[in-house]
Structures are given as structure tokens and as C-alpha cells.
Amino acid sequence: MNETRILIVDDDEALLEALPEALRLRMNGIAVDTAATAFDALERIRDVDYDAIVSDIKMPGMDGLELLTEIKQLRPGTPTLLITGHGEHDLAVRALRGGAYDFVQKPIDREYFFASLERAIRMRRLDRRVEEQRVELEQHARVLQHVDRGVFLVDDAGVVRYWNPAAAAITGLDAESVLGSAADGAIPGWATIGPTVPVATEPGPGSVDARTLPFEIDGRELWLSISGVKFEDGVVYAFRNLTEERALEELKSDFIATVSHELRTPLAAIYGCARTLLRPDLRLGDEDASRLLEVIAQESERLTRIVADILLANQLDAGRLRLTDQEVDMAGVARDVVDEMRATLDGRQDITLEMVGSVERLLVTGDEDRLRQVLLNLVDNAVKYSPDGGRVQVELARRDNGLRISVSDEGLGIPHGELQRIFGKFYRVDPQQTRGVGGTGLGLYICRELVRRMEGRVWVTSREGQGSTFIVDLPLAPAPARQPQPA
Ligand code: ADP
Image 1: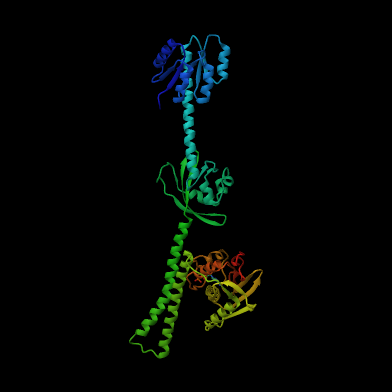
Image 2: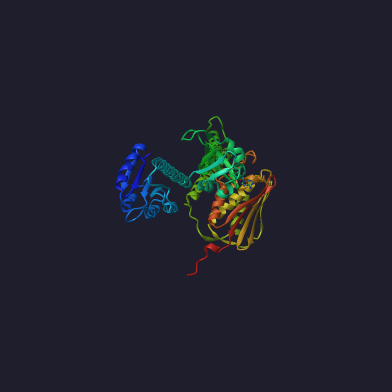
């Protein structure tokens, strides 16, 4: 710590010499400045933040009380001792009222003077330390307010005592709803997840590895990489949001799992057929040979469709897909799709595919090929996920300013918990539940993205074991958002 520095102000030169000397002898390492006038003193006080100031009251020019007033303005924290004449009680009282730390009467009782000065210096130092700590704490608090990691403190009683803005931003739980509440109640899932969070007993980087754990907050799944540090009064936790990274990881592994599986099936068929055709020991009749070639052609088409879907999904993600804007008669498109699909159903007598409801022209604005693709996909799924057959119906109906297309089936249906997720990229319901029906998990993702780009919406209602209805709502032409703006 810096040396102690005090200022003595007095017009009595003898005292100005004797007092510093005595002080230096008494207090080790003390630096004493002197000033013969209040003006001189003020100059110094402006430059130096003294630990204490001692001033005579009676001085020519500016007296000690006036000086005290100035000091209170300039250096409000500096303790000031005033020296009064013997018996000048009213001056002493005025000094104290003016904010003096203490007063000393002449002739100076040195013991009293030293003791009082020492107390003043100690108090000043303490004040300074408190101030430094306050500034430091404020800085820490400011840093915590601005870090991008969520930081929160749970005290020994399990109550949340601190919750920084990043914690609020990441979790969506604001400080008011969390602070002062039991962590178990305020942070969803904390009662079970809290005890599994690694907690270091000593602060410092790397003393404990964070764990990535799932939290479900307001229906959102959050993956937080979280660890804690034990302090005297509780545990401070810090976390980062890894939800997106986690989702990307999952997407990657979903992609590899489904796509490699989906590619392998047609490739194996093509390879098997080709090898059979090439066997020298087999004499195949024309009919058998053309059946094998037919399989090769069909499976190659399937491969092409898979690759096309992957590329299309990629274009949609990158925002690179251009859609045309034309008037499309959706009733016509739906009729074509139903006819086209019926033609491919030759082996499926158990399926009835039909169009119901309005057959009048229903114009929407959009990209005809992409709208056809959406419908084909939904009808194809309806057939595919009806392994025991049933009725597949395509219905068109006018609704307010829009058109509603429903594709319903009586097939496997979709478990309730999967209804939102099936529109996710590469997402497939567990094949165990879909009786091994194949797919890439891209179809519905593409449908949703295409329909969205045409200002529509696609969604589903379903009952497991009873069937599903996929609904596409599109604005009728001219779409409100695409109406030409008045000049
Ligand atoms: P894919 O059919 O290639 O798996 P989709 O994106 O078209 O991919 O569908 C995602 C998932 O949604 C499917 O794996 C399936 O479980 C479910 N699904 C889609 N349509 C239907 C339907 N009509 N009936 C039952 N399940 C369906």
C-alpha cells in the first residue's frame, strides 16, 4: 500500500516544524506536507489525495473553517482535524458541524492528537479499501452483465440469487421469475438435472469439464453445456447454449443414417439385377431379362429422385431456389396427380385413390411444378404409409380467401409426439413404428418449405392406427401479399 501522507496547515512556523518532526518519530513511514496558509493548502489538496489533513482554525486570510468547507467540496472523504485555541468551545462545535473529523485544543495534547490522527488515517484507509472493492465488484457485475454465457448463483438453501442477462436470453426465463425462487421450481428440470451438473470445489479454468445436458423450457428443448464452481455461499453455474450445434450434429448423423440406407437399397437391387443379367451360366428368356431391366430402370429412377430431393433441400436451405409466379388451377393439378398416382398403383388393389369435393377451377398464384411436387409427395406418403390399404382421398375446398387441400388416408397414422417433428429435415419416425417403410425424411421438409415460399401452410392431424390428414392452405389468386401495390 502507498505510504501515508498527511498535510498540516498552520501559520505558526514553530508548530509547522515541531509537529511534523514529532509525527515522523511516532508514525513509521509517514510523509508530512506543510502549508502556511489555507490558499497554499488548497493548492496541495487539489494535487494530492491526503490520508488526513490537520489545520489550525485561526489563520489570517482564509481561516480553518472556510478551509474545511473547501475541503468538503474538493475531497469529501478526507478526514480533517482542526486545532482550536484553548476554551474555544463554540469554534470546536462549529468545526464538528462543518464536517471536521475531530478537534484538538491548544496546547496540543500530543497523545490525544496522535491517537485521533491515527484513527482518522485508519478510517480513511478503510474507506478507500471499501471503495476499491466496490468498484471492483461493480466491474465484475458489469462483466457478468455482458458476457455471452449464462451465469447464475444458487445459494446453499437452493435459492437462485443471481441470474445474468445472458441466462435470461438463452433460457427465456427472465430474472424476475427466477430470482429469490427455489432453483428446483424456477428452472424446469433442475431437480433432476441439477445434481448431475459437474461442480468444481476450486475456482479456476479447467478444474472441471462442463457437461452438455438437455433442458425443456416452455416446450423448447435446450442443450446447455454447463458446469459450476462451489463458493462459500453456494454454487455459481455458467453455461453455453449448444442447442444449434447439437441439432446440426443430429442432422448430420440422421443424414448419414437415412441417406446411406436409402441409397443402399436401390443400389443393391440394381447391382443384383445387373449381375444376374451378366451370369454366363444363366440363359434368361426375353421376358425375364426385360423384367430385370425394368427393375434397374425403376431403381435408378428412385436413386435419381433421392439425389434430386437432397439437392432441392439444399437449395431451399441456401435460399437459392427460384419459384415461378403464375396462376395455377389447383383442381387441375390435383386431378393430374391423382391420375398419375393411380397409374402407379397397379399392384395395390387394396388402395382406393379418389378426388372428392369441388372440381371447379381454383386459381392460386405459385409455381405449378412445385405445387404438383407437394401434392405428389403427400399422396405418395398416404399410399406408402397405408400398408394395409384403405381409402386415400384428395379434397379441395374454398376457405375465406384461401384454398384448402386435404390429403387423407386410413393408414398407420402418426404418434402424437411426432406430429411436429416429421416436417424436420431428414426426420423419419422410427421404422419399427412404420413397418419398415423406406424414405429419406426429406419429403415433408421439402413440402413445408415450398408451401411456405408460396405464402401457404402445411400441417397434419392424425390418429395412430387410424390414419392421417395432411392439409395445405394456400391463398387464392391474386394472393393478398402479391397484389400489385397502387402507384
Ligand atoms: P419419408 O417418407 O421419406 O420418410 P417424409 O418427410 O415424407 O419422409 O415423412 C417423414 C415421416 O413422416 C415419415 O418417416 C413417416 O413416418 C411420417 N409420415 C409421412 N406421411 C405419413 C402418412 N401419410 N402416414 C403416416 N406417417 C406419415
